[in-house]
Amino acid sequence: MVSNNAYERITGMILRDELRPGTRINIDQIAHQLDVSATPVREALARLESDGLVTKVHLKGYSTAEMLGRRQLEELYELRLRLEPYSAGRAAVKATQAEIDSLHAELASCTVAPVRSDYDSYKRFSAHDARLHALILEIAGNSLISQAIERTHFHLHAFRLSYDASAGTHTLDEHSAVVQAIAAGDNKAAVRAMSNHLESSRNRLLPRASDESSPLDDAATSR
Ligand SMILES: [Zn+2]
Image (cartoon, rainbow, N blue to C red):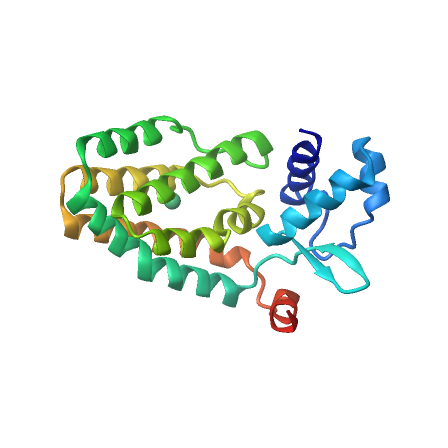
């Protein structure tokens, strides 16, 4: 699908930082660059706006979103730390053998940390991380919690912040500890392992976020 393709390609340009944060997006220029008409570019931008990767300003058009600031990142982790350790604990109590098997399969699907600034390996790793966390929330069984986490588009923001860093090996070990605790049916260990993973992940990402408050805040309040 052409529109989908434009979406994938523009997403890549933003995540790879080829379109810098806060850059005005010229629809005709992007359409020319991608060799498509303006319509699929407009459709892609509308979708990217709901992903939080571009912002639309009335009468001015689209710009790439600013990177998350420290405060926004702290808030995201606060939300995740409230909901995900609890959910991992619930998953430990509720998981069926088939669900435990699917957690192990997800772990096995990504055993290598991403290579610094290699878009495809980052993309695979980020998608795996998103799937594993979503799967644990799904097993825990509260669809409102799943939706609340999904709506933050955390993984896209984290991708932008960590793309030029080398990370991942710690993440893989932490994920494995979470899955082991769930597989063992150990509620407390699962809560602890997920808290530990999210706190470590927050500590890895926070130094990469800027101190300035982001114009995203203004966009959110003016909506
Ligand atoms: Zn993770």
